[in-house]
Image 1: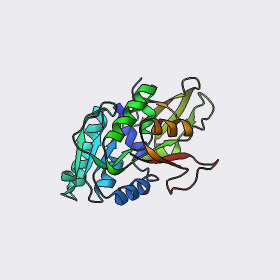
Image 2: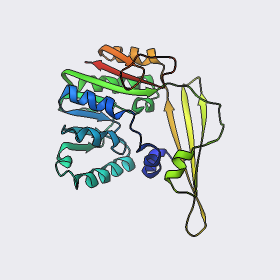
Image 3: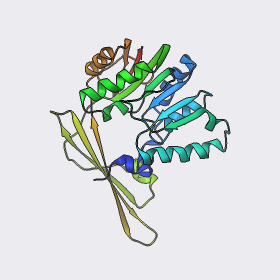
Length: 252
């Protein structure tokens, strides 16, 4: 199995156009008005949006292929905004053991970053390190999706993503759900027909450990955060039955 994070092109094909969360994190960054620490920067989607506000961003990404792709995007963006490169520092580090000398006005773990921490000890360690990197008056923010899971192992086509890869491309997705471990393993297969008429197939998997709302809220409190708030959307609305995301903001 190939991990999705080893294929940044396929990752960006699906997620680079995602914009739902950007106003949430931009607003927080503007309110905090200081340096930002981003955990799980991926290919730099949120990183670039925050740096465009003129704020310094330290972006943590442990996966080499994702980090390399983020560096490429940073270089390309800096051609239009020369000051951008000076505002972003992309580092190879693990959120569980992070120990920087700096403190930040905002620490964030966007786009389901915490869902890559399966073990309770790993979750506690990452959240504790996040709190330790907060400046006085700083805020921590994260989001995770609400675990409404479909039928197990049912293959479905993703026409919106397939179109991005070209007219003769099909992206198929299916999941395996382990309710005991609270783990979802997502399988993706992209089939493309090239100009030579040959079919080329790319495969990737994504393993995530999902949270329940109060489980994550309790974990934040146990890590030392206070004033923990959970929103049911990125507009800071209340949690509702139909909410598809839980967005958290907490103080250190």
